[in-house]
Image (cartoon, rainbow, N blue to C red; front, side, top):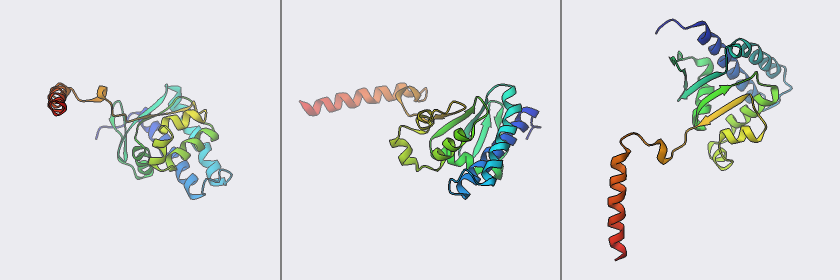
Amino acid sequence: MAELSAADKQLITLLRNLSGGFSSYRMFGGDTQQPGFVEAVKRVGTSAEPVLAAGSARVGVHGDRFSTAAGPLPDDDSYRRLALACYERRVEEMALTAAPTTTDLVSLYIVLTTAPEEIEDLGGARQMLISQGVQSIRLNEAVVSPTSLPDDSEGLSEEKDALSVGLGRLDD
């Protein structure tokens, strides 16, 4: 693997700290007053500063891995669980546009500990964060729609038309 840029190294540190906060949140049952959680939040803020100085922090989610526009980040146990929690909740991309507050992080961790089926019922992970007023963290979800079909969707249109004609014959 190619040498990581300084920006990618800073981003990895931020992801590790976000993951550490997530682990603390889960370990303490959501008790945000626990010293371990309070320290994790501070580490997230500190590691977010240099990353955000260059713009927003944006990563793609691919199973238990993260990637940037430059390619996949190294496989790392320290943030694998965070990536997988995002992936299981249909999150394709996570972006930080500002240093998250404690409340923002708690909202993120609530989303990541909510059952995937429940998240769907609540409008999705992104909507959950928006409804909590979170502006520093954005989650973009996988959406299956006709506009997200691959380029070979023309063949699907022909099949759909043929099926419609066939179904129309049933009505005759």
